[in-house]
Image (cartoon, rainbow, N blue to C red; front, side, top):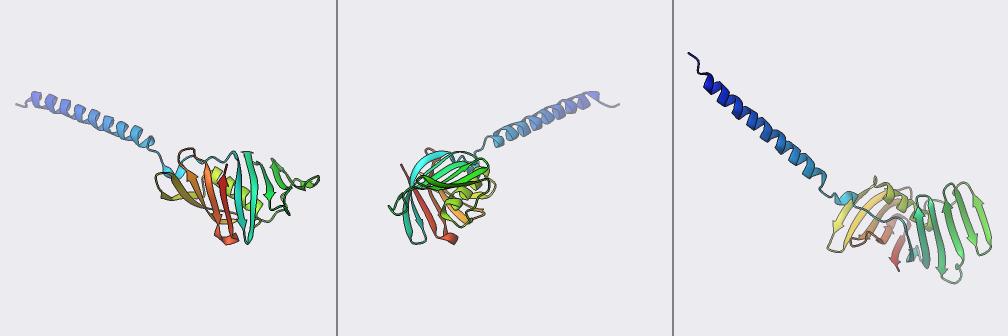
Amino acid sequence: FYNFNNVIVWGEIMHKLIYIFIITIMIFAFTSCSIKDENNSDISTTFTSQANVVFNDTEMICKISRTATNIACISIIQPIELQGITFSWTDNNYKVSYNELGYENNIEILPNNSFAQAIINVLNSIESKENISLVSSNDNTNTFNGTCSSGKFFVTVQKSNSSIKNIKLDEINLIIDFFD
C-alpha cells in the first residue's frame, strides 16, 4: 500500500519552498531597484554662476546662466577688452551681442570648439546622462567623463548640492572653474 501521508507532507514542503523562493525574488527585486547608481546621480545643469574660464591662453571671468534645456546665457565680465560680449540660447534662437550691437539667428553659428558652444555642449550632454560615466569619487566630489560634439570632457560635481565645480576639455584647451 502507498502511504498518502508522505505525499501530503512533501506537497506542503514544496508549497513552502515555492513561497520562500517567490518572496526571496521579490525582496531582491525591490531592494535592487533602490540602490543608488553613482553614474546616474543628479548633476545640476540649471544654475547661474560666475566662472574662471581659461581658453587656450585667454583668461576670462564669465557669468554663466542656464535656466532650462536650450535656454542659456554666457556673458564675459573680464578682461575689460571682452567685457560686454554675450552669447544667448533661447529654444531655437541663438544670439551673440556686444553691448547694444547684436546678431540673432535661428541656427547656431559658433563652431563646436569655441568656448561658449563647448560649455553648452557639455551641459547638454550632462543633462542627457547618456554619454557620461563616473571616473572617481571622494568624500566631497564626483568626477565624471563624457563626450559631446566639442570633444571628451571631465566634470567635477560637488556631492552636497550636485553643483558643477569644474569642466575640462583637453582637446580644445578649455578649463572652467565655477565660483559663486
